[in-house]
Length: 377
Image 1: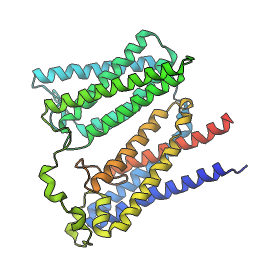
Image 2: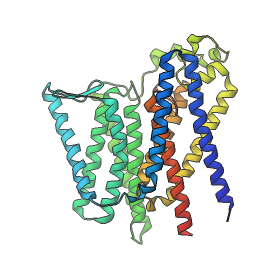
Image 3: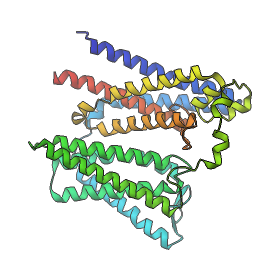
Image 4: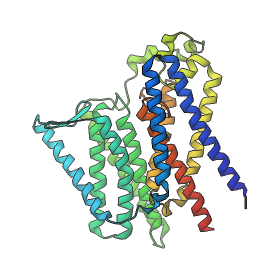
């Protein structure tokens, strides 16, 4: 039987897909306008091939995605604890020896091993939802004090590891900014879900404990950030004073259409490019389309079915990243923020592929929501 909810969902899926493809095409057209030659053609070919391979692979394996069970969750928890502890040991060695360098610069070097921090950032992005799955499964199957202490140590050590890796670049890129946001929202979600799943009759008491835990973790993260920026002598917010001339009168100066190639090359991101080259009308339309895009993504997330979906933390992180890219990207494009952030479906080939993965994960989440909706009726 075709219902209004079914029609609405199909309509949302259609709009979501059209907007995703439209954003990719828009970025390709803008890139063509900014560059020319074999490099842009090669980039587009790589992007199209990568998107096709990732899309086919994810949809092919999506039928097996619910088979991710709780088996061996304790072993994974201990492994993650060991990994985070190993990093903290390296942290202290970094201060005492020249053989290890993990805090400063764009690379992590341990003896002769050298890894760029962008690679580590992607690993951290993947590790965060995996941590949430492991912790939730661990506390579901075992609520002993020993397990709770293990979980607490993992969260604390992983938070320290994530922030200290990127806090030195706090004002130069958004790695630390994104990880702080991702970690904080993920841990807060986990605390609330665990509080909700408890069978205690005293609802006020369990939600008070959950609220206290969220506040304590927020204070802990804030202290970590303050400590990091004091150690590396950074400002809490990026310094805008040196860029005041560039920002003053920005809207007045750029409301005129600028068609020369140099202006295109200076465009910070898609929102900035549209505003400079097409005017306010199209910019408002673009921002409204992004608002619609994130609203549909929120519907696809399906938090009310989260307790029945093992991979809900993965879908959560996909949505969190999409939200921060849209929000921070628009703020940067409008010169309201100095944190450099590209909007979804723009940047390098890996950035675009990452956004495609986010979209596919949210579509998979939506499909599971519909299946659970039928089962729970």
